[in-house]
Length: 79
Image 1 (cartoon, helix red, strand yellow):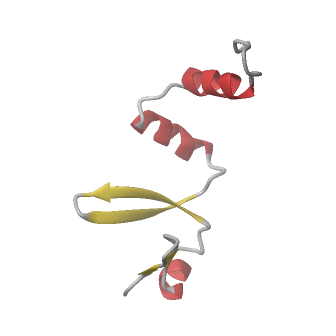
Image 2: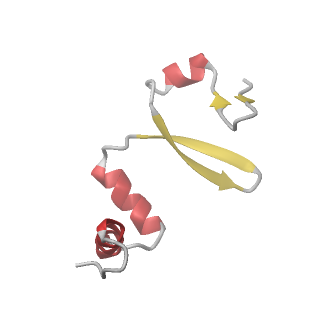
């Protein structure tokens, strides 16, 4: 089957493919060689998030530090 990439980089997947996967709303996207690999992803899945953090070699403390930094006011160090 063919999927179409629009001018705005939106990818349209064939309905049969999406239905066969259980109608996921999100996909994890990876490149393997010259292939684009889409894997259904449940954004609310804590295990999936932990696996992704592990592949990126990030610790939960790194995420907490990033959130603190993002929430800090300009000119003030994070608490």
